[in-house]
Image (cartoon, rainbow, N blue to C red; front, side):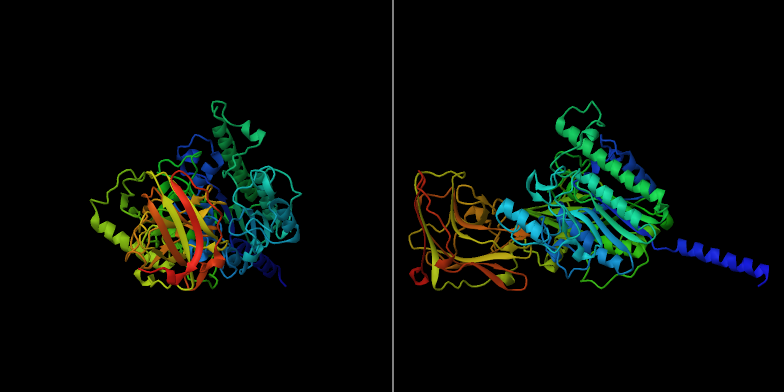
Length: 636
């Protein structure tokens, strides 16, 4: 071969090598803070210095209208699946076990040859059921796990490498499940690791760095859900020493130390990417799971964690990817955690895997071209309300009214403009109804659809609760009469339904059914309160609505349970609250959970289901009896 030909071949090989390096699939590093508010960052006016995170926001593209949920588990499931939390059983409350049938973002990247890792808080399922963890739980709780059943484990959802904890609130220094109670919740894949010691954030960051180093020569998806700044507020002495001496309040000092510690850990991860020459071709996302608690800062937004106002769901978020020219800018399009799975796949030039129907949209073309967002709206529910957010408006719907805010002009949601914009309220109400219907949402604060109503069918034995009320009870005077216990799970698509009647001569109102948590009547925490427990007739149960039809006539009631899913409603009771004097005899039958597929789970159908204790007389409530009687005894 002649020398010129050799040079040509050499140049071709060098060029091909360079092209291959340039064409390498981008890495993904997804950094998720826990309970970090918009105003917690110093770039957003916060008083806690966050120089490294601020620098990332300056270098990347800030997503100015990025939404999550108002608590953590739903936001995490939105990221994992690009599906609304109601569809995957992980909202609106925390908890829930992500089903194996759901396709996750980790599985999507893994299918294209990526190495996948998670380091930190999972909270989309329970600790795995291994002999070691079962023994630890039995020593602490006397049962297998906190909820009686082990989880799948995070590796079942496409993660090759996992250093995680499964609970929502581990002790930072002991890694125990909550405030030094319970067993350790710290795992390496399916290996239970109670022997590991160290501050949680240091362990999380250290293992993330190790994963990045080990996979520097192949594309990787590295998900780092930090623990900071979730309760309990705990900081290392070395981090506390770095807090401004002018901050004297102890809670604020600890909070500041934790935020600054996360800033340092973010810096460590980014510095490692730089050191390895990976930064230019790594898509880095930094965001939070929900707004801050009262210890943090959500300004200029209203509300925070556990709130559907902007402060609960509007999250500080940035994407940085030099090779993709995602640098130095801002984008105002509406988007959120739902969009991250399809968007990151598109940014990496990868085909989406086959999934169940998605709610999240691919925003990459709009982000790349500075165009309008394909996302029309975000929809949430939380206890006494549901809410919708569009590019222009945010509307909150309660049991008895709606509030509307011009989000472009009033980001702090200070002025309700519903009365001045009836057409907007009507349009957004239709959108909310469409969302709720598509999700099968069993809204607790709204009447169930009329199609779910049914005729009462009492038969066999029915429950009888008799109470004599004397004196002049006040609204604060409450008698809770438990009659059943049930340990099953409820979801946001479930309804509670039952048949109810009163005996001749008994007052027909002043009492109501409510699920409760607690061990007995004295420690009961009622679930149906003001603004919740609305039946198909539009009545709040706490008002003690009158039974329809009069004495001896059965009425069927159905009430949504969205506020309590995913979770357990163990106690069931008839409640007398501020009830007028009289002799009450209340009947109940066919108490059951109605599921989205139409199937039902019984709670009380006959005397065998009765679980009650003797309740002593008080000055106001006397002669309290709970028993099963023949349905034939209930007559007009």
